[in-house]
Image 1 (tube, one colour):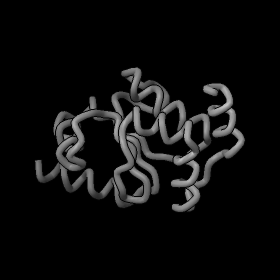
Image 2 (cartoon, helix red, strand yellow):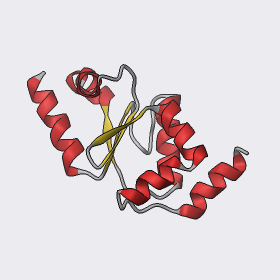
Image 3 (cartoon, helix red, strand yellow):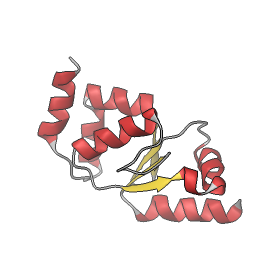
Image 4 (cartoon, helix red, strand yellow):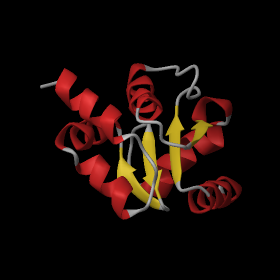
Length: 120
């Protein structure tokens, strides 16, 4: 598990935005992962996707690393942000926009506004 923790740490620290998910950005394997990847994709965020289904050590390791029991998990600039419910709430409230702006992560503001309009 130490190897998995090192791999996770390196991935989180070497990418501005990382989504640990079931499946990939192009083929999510669960609804929650699909929702978060869909938000990031629609907003045009550049991110690294890590398929936890491809490696059991990473699948368990990410839960231990963050002390968070569920997947997906989003990291921005090395910091754990949250899972599906938190990302959904942050998107709808505009907090995700603020987080991206504070961390100089490029995203499409108009797309973020469209998500909020569609869910108003």
